[in-house]
Length: 528
Image (cartoon, rainbow, N blue to C red):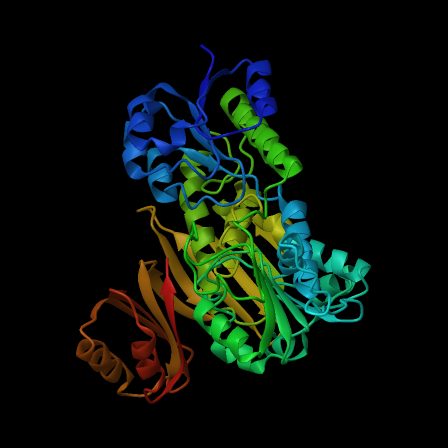
C-alpha cells in the first residue's frame, strides 16, 4: 500500500509532483494548517505531513497521528513543531537547513543598501509629489567596515557579498576558527571590538539564551556614533526599546529589520521612526528559495517513506532500524556529553576530539559523533541538528578527530569528549550502565559518577572544609531543593568538582551568590 502524505501549507506544485512521481499518495490542502481542529481530525490517516510555518504541530495533533512517521518542514525553523512530543511518538522531524541561505543573505545586503541611501523613505516622498533631493543624504558603503555577528552559512555569504562591494568585513563567531576566517576573507574579532569598529552591523545568529538581546543598551554604548544595524536573523536578538532610544538620541543612524520580538508585528516601538526600514519577515521569500526548500523536503520525505533513509532530521541521526535499540542510549550519552562541554565553552572552538573505547567503538560511531557535535554546538546554534552538525563544524573550520579503541578499558563502553578552545582544553567522559541510563564518569581527569538531570549546577572549587555546607545553605535560603550532590577531587586540598542536580531553575542572582562563596572558582548552571 502506497504511503500517504498530507500537505497542510502552501507548497510548490513541483513538490506535489515529486511525491506523485515517487508513487506516494498526496493530499494537498494548503489552507488546512490554520484549522487545527480539522487537522487533528484527519491526521491519523497519513504517514507523512509536509508543512511550512502556518501549521502548528502540537502534542494534541500528534496524539491523533496514529500512523504518522515523518514531518517535513520546508525551511529551517521547526519551532512550530513540538519536537519532544514528536520524538516520544517516534515521528522523525526533518527540515531543510540550507535551502534559503542565499535568499536571506541577499535580503540582508538589500536592507543595508536601502538603509545607507534611505531608499524607502525617498520613494514614499517622491511618489507623494515631493522633490526633497536635499533631504535624503545617504552614505557610501565602499570602504566601510561591516561587522557580522554569526558567520555561519548565511553570515559567510553576506561577508562574501560585502567584500564584492569593497567593504572591510570583521566577524564575531565563537565557532569560527582563525583558518576559516582567513579562507572567507574576514577578520575574526571579539564582540566588543566589533561593536567599537563597525560602521554597519548585521546579525546572523540563532536566538538562544546566550544571544538574546545581544544588541542591548550596553552594546549600543560601545558602538560608533552613526552606526547602522541590520537584523534578518531572529527577533529578540535586538533590544527594540534600547534601539529606539539610541535612534532618537542620534547614536544609531538607522536600523533595518526583517524580524521582530513579536510576530506578526502589527505594533512595534520602532514603527514610525524616520530612520527605520522594516519588512515583514521576507528573508526567505523568493521564488527560488520557496522552490528549493519545497523540492528538498519532498525528496527527503519520499526517501524516508520508501527506503527508510533519514536526511536532515532534527531529532534522530541516520541509523537503521536494526541498529537503533542498541545505539540509542549511546546517542543520548554522546549528545549530553557534548551539551555538557558546549555549555561550559565560552571562547572560540578550535578542536574536538571524540574517543570511543570498548564495545561502543564497534558501533556506528559516525552517528554518535554527529550527536555529540549537535549537543556541543546547540548552546550557540539552536537550529542545529544531528545531521547538519558535522557540516556546520567543518564550515567553521573546527577540527573534529575521532578515535576508536575496541580493546579493554575501565568500562564496558566509554565515550570521551575533549574540547580545545583558544584558551584551554577540557575533557568529559561518560558511559551507559546496564540500566540504560547515561552517566558522567570523569571530568577533567577527576573521577565522578553522576546521572544527567534536567537542571544541574557545575562547580569547580578548592577541596577545603565548609564548601558543601555553605552551598547547601545558600540553596536552602533560596528555596531550592538539592536532588543529588556528586563530588570528586584531584587530591586532598587540591582542585575539586561538584555536579549538583537541583529542583527548579538557577536564577542569575542565585548563581552570582554561589560564585561569591569561598573556595568557588567557577559555577555554571546547566540544562539537559
